[in-house]
Image (tube, rainbow, N blue to C red; front, side, top):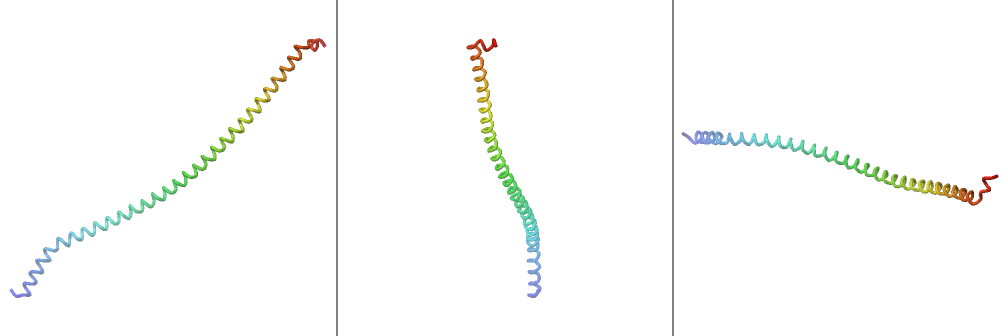
Amino acid sequence: MDSNELLLAISSMIDQKLEPIYSRLDQMDSRLDQMDSRLGHVEERLDQMDSRLGHVEGRLDQMDSRLYNVEKQLVQTEGSLRAALVESENLILEEVSRVHNILNAHRENRSIHMA
């Protein structure tokens, strides 16, 4: 066997030994591409989730603001109702006092009924 044949035989043996390695490398490249694709999808979903969280935070801020305004209105309404209640109670007490004064005047002066 001459040296060229020997080199071809060695090259053929090396190719046969490297073929499974090349095949595995191709499989690994394919799996890496799939993983890259999946990671891209995961990143897209994370971006969508970030966007949704931003919208949720915005809505929570709006709701917090509205709740603050409702609480403020409740405090104002409570103050108005208390003032109206005190005014009403004072009017009732004044009327009761006026009626008592009239009754006392009648009791002290019976001639009022005789006229």
